[in-house]
Length: 295
Ligand SMILES: [Mg+2]
Image (cartoon, rainbow, N blue to C red):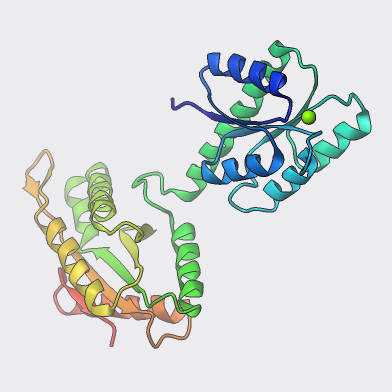
């Protein structure tokens, strides 16, 4: 399991040094900051798994730092444990209401602090796993349809701010039912996994591939013309066609048809998806194992 990163933000040099030394021995990667502003910068630079945040600090105090972290979509899920000299119920309540997961009173007992850190990180691990499970298709380990569609909408919004045209490619395995009927569903699953793998490793960095439906995949090709998306699809098509699958009976290969649509001239995401779908239909009608572009 990879080491978890803990950021300690505290203006008290001694307390920071003790926590740092002790938690480092527990196998965490420790970053530290001597003040609120520095802490925020460090959190943004390299997102930690947990933040220990002192309340009383000159400049921006812990509560202000917490509010800023919670208002940033990139940082709002980092659990925060407040460290404070104040053993005042209302202070603790305030910290927890701001979204902290826990509160440790200073001078802290190092065993208690370690236990609270462990507990917070256990929850964080589960939360990270849940996020992965909710975004990834369990068989093919690429994005599921919901995430694919969300990313498509995001790309569309970016495009409206004239970041550049992009393409949406729909890919569908030809005669997939026949694969399942001939070789059985476990082999059908192997085919799906392998094709997802090929697509995932063939797209450019920044492009997105997801499982659209049963044997259908969607690819978002950022900053691209329809021609570029057709060329790329041709490469994917060829790579898949060359792949050999093995069943108990025999070796076989499968082919995939592609439909390409570009955002230029489109009025909505729905229109873009439906254009890619029509192009895919055309590829199927024209004999399969080919790339067709929306007109
Ligand atoms: Mg302090």
